[in-house]
Length: 347
Image (cartoon, rainbow, N blue to C red; front, side, top):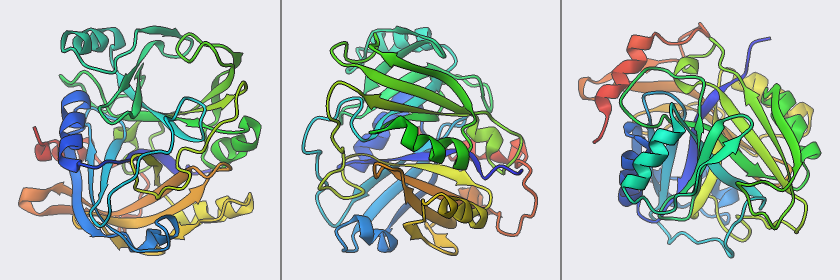
């Protein structure tokens, strides 16, 4: 069966100052190759914005060594809201974003020499070998892990997004969505207890699922493998991170997967009672890019976005775009074509 999900396209991050935030992500994670920079009204998302249409600016950018990108997102029609409490690991929603690195010890030393704030110690990990945590200036949590899949070699210390950690109320209730529908078919670990890299005063069950990179889908070679880590806190009642707030407010607003066949995915989600809550139905223009997008909610209301790309800028200054809607093949795009996007990098 053809795979429906090829990788994480991006994680949405709600911010209050998009220029400042993207500058930090460029400097820290080399998320510096923009796909689009668009200002518009989020007309189809009013279900998640208080039943009102709000305006926003969004920048989608990639790290060209491989992995998914960030969609840095800022309301322009309202002031975004902070969480009502300080989110902790195990609260319901996206707890952290996994960033891959070829050498976690080396990048940890580099961050330490730069006096990077929000840096944890290095921890041993059953899957990643060595890992550490890093908070951005906006209290968003990132986990730096050693990744097995790379699009190209480069001088950057990290690649892009290779996974997310999601707090759930019941792991067993969430697994059918992530494993059966989204195709995370390998369990890397499933453990319950206390953990050195988490709060030692609490007990957790954590399960890490992997979707290996396959040579199928236009962007599969660029996006690489994906890990989803589900965490269920056992020793306290978790809180919903986005309670009484809008999609687009401060923090991780969604995880977005690249899709090869939206129609089939919609049918598969509906079969196990995860209907699309938002569906652009046809091409939705994002200025320099276009595609069909949709959303579902996981059992705890965490927003998952799907995008099937129809138009993509390869070389903006030459006006070179690729029309994927007319492309019949599910084969990856040629490496040289994807590498040309590096010429759009913003330093």
